[in-house]
Length: 440
Ligand SMILES: Cc1ncc(COP(=O)(O)O)c(C=O)c1O
Image (cartoon, rainbow, N blue to C red):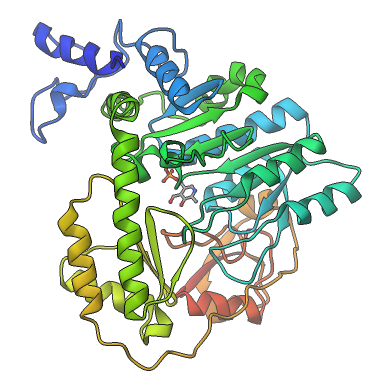
């Protein structure tokens, strides 16, 4: 597969051209990557008015992912999420989303900025997981005359739980509703021996953070449009351009472009081998007494309390031994693997984790997620005058904007909701000391 963006930048570097355009480093090296860091000069195409090398590269990505249109983002899935919501609102003329409550904070702030409403789908009592089911959706869609602009779910979630996207898509389409999937953690799902990518399973639109699971620089992501929703592709660049920088990083674009060649040739075999290594490690950890949760084949999520530690404590133990994990909280430790991990990485994790002495299980459970009272819309709360107060002073107050720690950037409460005692307990449990609340 050709890599037109990389080829263009290579040829430009070799040409010895005098750079009288941005960026100001003029290709002179401080970090080592400057000569490849160009801007939208003649021949380099334009990210959201594409028709040259970028479009050619995006078409390669679309062929690889089986989409009607794939548009690049140099600003993560966060940008794609704003674009997706705009596309669904514009296409349907509706402004309400039905969304799994474990949505990333970008979804929440995008709704506030777009003046969209959210009706939450609840599916469990934990912060990061939300087990939305096809049956639950069917019951709700069946009873509702006013359909949403789209159903919006997160799969895989931060802990590696994967929803039944095929069944959820079938229900959405039976009721004439678009399905949008936050697949930030699942770009690689397309390349598993059994293709499990949301677009292949029936989602209409989805975002993938290429940088999270593929060998792509941080910030590289895709907005995918399915063949069934192909007409939305015409507006996709416009949708992204509403929220994007006018100076996209060509380093990131080259990284996405170079990745296409690997996805086309070699990645599927490498990912299958990596899944086997991960499964072997999962088996070894389970056999040693660890409790694992989640169903993602490249992620290992340990529910650490059964082993006698908080997730944070195990993460600190690993970090002291130069093993740095993706995420930890009081209950979980999340390790993300990819084909670029060496065989020794797996051995080392097994040796170090199995070297940790099992202790008496910790019994403190995470407090139940609150079902909060809603006082104002997301937008009203976001634009209201606000103040940051210690958590103890926030009980009874209305949250102004989601206060999140990243990762996992899943809000306990969203703007407009009342901080009651049960919400305060959850905030306290996850270590929040202050909140941004609406001024009284
Ligand atoms: C579930 C989920 N969605 C969206 C995002 C945002 O992705 P990005 O960092 O690529 O903008 C993240 C980031 O961690 C995420 O975990």
